[in-house]
Image: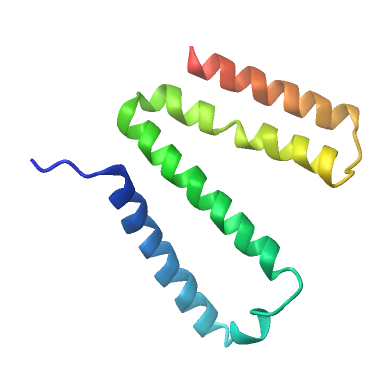
Length: 113
């Protein structure tokens, strides 16, 4: 059987997403053109670059290691995103958020063992 390279798997799976989102945009009657020069568009494009890097590394990790290890480690994006929100966007630090981050780290650690 022919092996599927991880980069091709990313391309195929995200092609489905791209087409589906395009159909939803068309169904809702939205136009992309007015938003191409929106002040926030550069940030959205930067997020797209980061998402691409993340997906490429995630699929590559799945090709190299066991799912039971890779998926929990990938789940750390929840922790990292939460910390970025607190540090970069001055989101409030509450006991609930600290507990959630700590429990997320604990869950990821337990799942990776």
